[in-house]
Length: 229
Image (tube, rainbow, N blue to C red; front, side, top):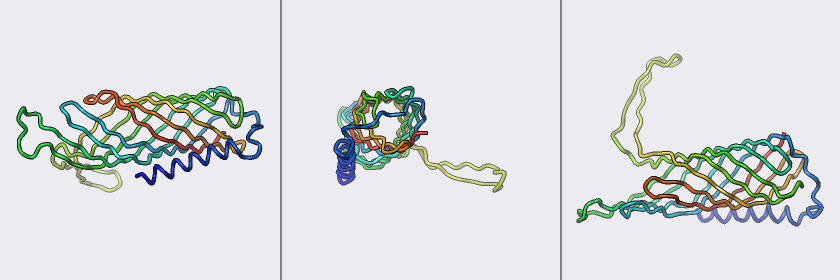
């Protein structure tokens, strides 16, 4: 996971260097992004974080890469509104404390697994300059769905009549999962490489409101490749 972190930092640094020092960067042209739509592929790296919950239990979440799709509209050269759908898998180690005054043998319990996190967020971005190269700030409000993949019951089965395949049966495993309110903020640099292609690099902070752990912040880096139309 640390290797992913280094690679994304190097990619982000390279983007900033190209935007800042490439020929013509100092005389960046006026942008024509107002009244255009944008479609993008964001790549995120979320740093490792420890989430402490009630009763002394905790979860150490490893840093990892996440991917997504974004869609937005430029209301002006400076203001963009849109939404984004991202997902990632991350390994974790959980420490489970007993709820008894005198813990029974075996506690605390340590277990590992891989969680799945999916986020839908409505975004806003403010570009400081009406240029093809500009610094920006961004923010978002949305929801994050997390599946711990920890079983909460026995495997269950269901059967149905499929209009194409006939009588079909399948099984599924109930797991501990929930949705949480989330919000984010970031600071970065945007460069429009052509009339339709752009790239952005940013440092982001995001916050999740966990029921048992309160508000927890996650930091990370972000690179985004997009198209205007």
